[in-house]
Image (cartoon, rainbow, N blue to C red; front, side):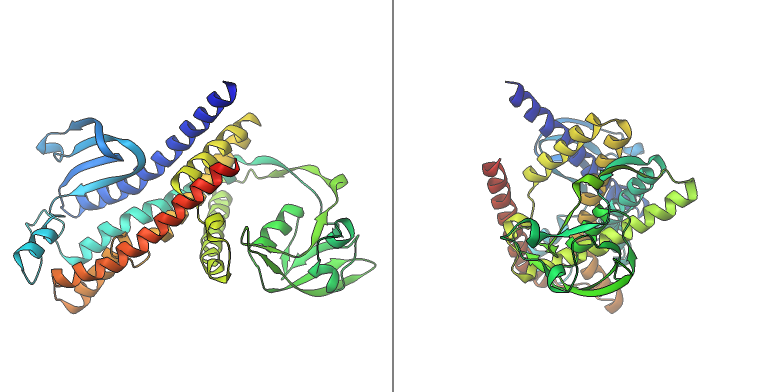
Length: 381
């Protein structure tokens, strides 16, 4: 019974977190639409049947605010979004609409509205990392003195050992990036699979070793065959930073995570087990809920930091995903609006209709992978 209650709370925490990110994304679209003169007919958190709704007066925009049953996703329904379907059915060569509708405004305004949702996710990621830097947190990590994995576990190989490194070496830098503790080493190596990494280590003097990292196809992480010294685990502090330093650190973390996310997409094409690498909504909800519970059980600062970091990771992933030039995503709308803006010609509805098939196929494949990932995740639990 207790396990059941814990699981329920984990899911609730996760749903609240995801719901907030969806709200932030759709609010970006909403603010941009209203600013560009487009009427927002409905704004919903969640999908499917409406549980609760409240419609504001026309003076306040006339938006129907909704809370819907299925707690994944959401939408910002703008006036005129169905004009595309109407133009298609009537065989028109272009999509026309009233001045306060989505297709009735200029293409550059439509581009802004489409970009505003992903941009809101970027802003939240930057904000979250800045708050974490301002508050700081405590964590535990081993030092940078390492042992060769093949000497500790006979079944493992060690690219570091093969390159000439030895047990007892202290890692100072990898590719000229300073390693302050073992968690820095793990983070850096994990994101650089199948690459030549230059390790600067301290032994009796300073040595440089070029190590070719391997790829763990189960996790998609890079491996170099080293283990930490368990006796060197100590309590460490991240931050807190002063206000302007926190903004700088938050920006650094945001740009670094974006870079790593792009690199992760590249890794998917190297034979990684995709169902492990791609997370569906149920898996993300569970992981987020666990992060919130575990973090706050360690204290407020740790809980706040771990929650905001996880939310920032998801939010920045949404930023990148939604900018993909796929017709059914924001990136597709941005691409078509840009083409229309540059050429000064409205796109033919039939052209949009046919090209959407490719987008729908792409999204369907991702959805299938995500569902498979969710099923495998909960089976393994």
